[in-house]
Figure 1 (cartoon, rainbow, N blue to C red):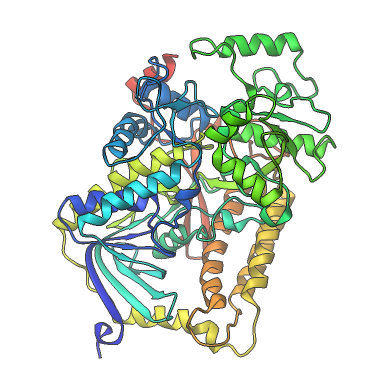
Figure 2: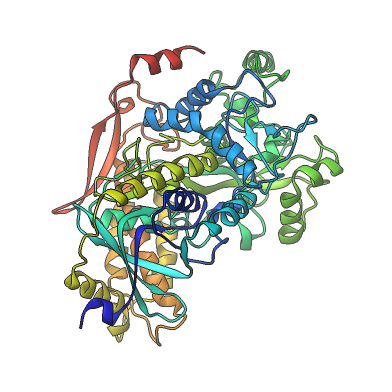
Amino acid sequence: MTTDDKFETHEHDVLIIGAGGAGLRAAIEASSMGVSVGLVCKSLLGKAHTVMAEGGVAAALGNVEPKDGWKVHFRDTMKGGRYLNQWRMAQLHAMEAPDRVNELEEWGALFDRTADGRILQRNFGGHKYPRLAHVGDRTGLEMIRTLQQHGIHLGMSVYMECTVTRLLGDDNRVSGAFGYWRETGKFVIFKARTVVLATGGIGRAFKINSNSWECTGDGQALAYLLGAELMDCEFMQFHPTGMVWPPSVRGTLITEGVRGEGGTLRNKDGKRIMFDYIPELYAKDTAPTEEEADRWLEESAKGTGKSRRTPDLLPRDIVARAIHSEVKAGRGSPHGGVFLDIHSRRSAADIKRKLPAMYHQFKELGDVDITRESMEVGPTAHYTMGGIRVDPETQETRVKGLFAAGECAAGMHGANRLGDNSLSDLLVFGRIAGHHAAKLAKATSQKSVDAGQIEACEREALAPFEREEGRNPFQVREDLMNQMQKYVGIMRNEGDLQAGVVELERLAADAGKCAVSGNRHFNAGWHETVDLRNLLVVSEAMARAALVRKESRGAHAREDFPDQDKGHWSQVNLVVRKGSAGMEVEQVPLPPLPDEIKQVLEEE
């Protein structure tokens, strides 16, 4: 009996795993090139984490500030990433983002408008000019709606509620994927000439996070286990403003758009906190005077079209650590955060019109009326800058035929992502990945699928059912999230990270002993064992890379190395790969900057 006879089998030119913004945009591009496209999603179409993106999509359209352009956006992105970005990815992103946003509008996206009918843009953290095209505070939802409605008519096949457990092929070339239907537990094989991973982030590795349940590092782990490399894994962004209360929704994201619309962060005494953390002014034991802060505000606002810029919109890593410092110093809110005040800055009508989702979120989940009361907020694990190492021009990994785009890919954001560069990242690199995956699929034949590999995938997937006794996967997962929060969180040090690696090794052993009972239909414990394996891969990669990088840079903060290094560490990315003795971390020099790119960076 062949594997095709034993298992349900589908064959496509291009297989895309993940149906968020990056996956949908890749599918649209590949389908438009006339190849057969299969789109696999872990949940239902339309339920991807992209829908939770609220503030907007960053693109230098210049509709609010004509001085904006791709060069300014590029400089902001490189500066925010502390110059560890792959410069070519940052350049492509800044240059192509306006076209991708205009394309969305052509496909039916209903953006908010300026008085003269153009796409409206708002301020956001780390961006010099108002740059975020938005749909109230529900931009991600509108993006997914638009991409789905446009893409579904192009002939792609969509496979919903399907978990991929392994990529097929080897470290030289990918040949497809092995998985199972979450409803029935039956196995399914996807044969493909090329594969695009677009599975999102890893936030569910942490106890307090803003991510949806799908964000368990699936693409990163699948790529690593096949032989691809990971990069920049030490850089985990903690969004400064997650809900702090009630506990049932702790970590749920509060869009940066609240601060973009004038919201301010205050401690328990009502003092605005961010004036004490302006990088250009802040010294270890001294806060700037009011005169120094005022002078900084006026200088930093020059050329932005606004009279004053707010320090509340400094890059996320700075704001998150400021909140952490206030709480640690005993100046936090009653439930361990700080206060975010919008009601004293905007009318109730403005808040309900510009921030409708935030208004309803707090009213329904926390019984807080943000038109009258301040929100309690604190840092929440939000976005990983690290991920699968890809070629900047094509998004292909070191495994032939395997591509990656979106949050599961590394390189674009460097050490820290600017607010909502993520949504334009999805569009720009989703298109590039889809284009090159289709181009390669047209030029190559299907690699044969190894029957022995299929049998090994089946044995691995069924192993938890064969253990009569073993660890509960839900308990191991809870333990993992607590250990990551404790040892690999917002502030790190050598001792904690070493302890974290030891704990992760223990948890990996426990995960290998997990047992599940019952049959394969709707078996949540079985789903958990697959997610757990993937989370352990990305958690170990983060902890080991964080241990190697002995400096504080962007979203990676070391208490024992508090300064940003201007020498060696400013010149290397950390690459994680599977070695003969386990996970290895290598220091790889940054690609050299061409003279014309150096000139762009020096133009400000």
